[in-house]
Amino acid sequence: MVLLVLLASLLVIVSIGALHVWVMQTKLREHELQRAEADVKHQVELYIEHGADAALLAGDPDAIAAFDARMYEDFVRTNTVGLALWRPDGTVVYALDQSYIGKVYPLPNGASAALATGVEQSQIGGGDAANAAPGWRSDSAIEVFAPLRSNRTGIPLVWEVGLRREELSKQADRLVVSVALLLGLGAGILLLAQGLLSFALVRRNDREREYRRWLTQRVSEMAAVERRQIAADLHDGVVQELAGIALDLEAPLPGMESAIEKSERKAFAARVRDAVATLRGQTAELYPTAAALIDVPTALQSMLDRMPRGIEKHLEVDPDADIEPGYRWLVFRVAQEALRNVTQHSKAPRVNVALRRTEVGTVLTVTDNGRGFSPETDAVEPGHMGLSLMSDTATAAGAHLTIRSAKGEGTTIRLEVPE
Image (cartoon, rainbow, N blue to C red; front, side, top):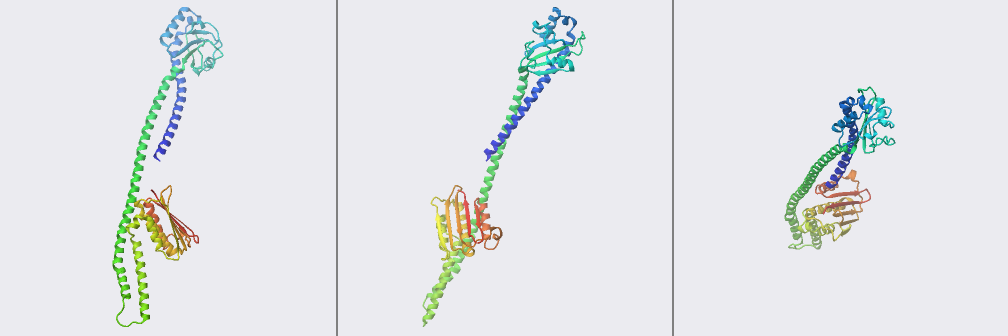
């Protein structure tokens, strides 16, 4: 159970973590473009607007060399794929690859949008793949176009920067990895705490269950002591007195006695002996012998033998059925209560008692074909209180007692005792 809870928790945490990482990657991709736009805007404001003078636009070699030196000194980095300055007609005013300077190409879409809106434009990959020049455009580059809002010439210009996307993504990837590691560490700590707490709860539940079982058995043992005392008092008191009366009745009286009186006295003595036998049997049920407690099948057979002769009795015992000593008193009491109900209430002509071994443990079944009763309405009536109390006792001891009955259809009592 604990393992299933931990696996389910792990599945939920991994799913949430994967979703979180995916959302972070999406947001960081948007952040890449925003950061690239901010960097290019900063370049334009810092130098490009002031460095793009008339000499540069006229193609003066010295102006181009000075501008190029400043670019390599301040703006060309490992993530820079290309730089270009465009006129609105598609003329390349400046490019890192100076072979493109002065040539005319179709103006990139991003440059046209930047000129039209006056706002920085960015895109990932070859949106202008058809316009092969300048040749740095590829799916692995981020292209940013920034309009020059003010310059010395007064001619509208667009500054284009090509950035290597994988270089810009490294920091974002490191951030994602760091967050994933933190999530994994947090998930591990959470699962560890949950596992320890679950194991502690399971052990606590086992201890409480064992304590309830011990307490129930202890109560039964105390009740057994009381029953033993009562049985001893009956055996040493009433039973002995009745046995003595029976002997006195059978002893010959001095003097003359008619045959009728002798016959009546013997008949009365026989009735007393039957009463003594019945009382001894009830005393044995009140406090079963040690053999009955240890040998459940023998105890069951003994109870069946003491039932009235008019009831057909059958006992079935599985040779593999083995009841733990701590549960034998419970099996004995449930069988005793069930057979007492058969004798006193169900008026059944036949009763079957079975003791079998199953996958869940050992099962005791007492089935009769008597008049039955309704467990919903008759369970609290006199004669059925014993079964209700026995069901509570079985539950407290960790066993399971079920009662199936219907009026006119007999009764089946089933006790499941764990191994």
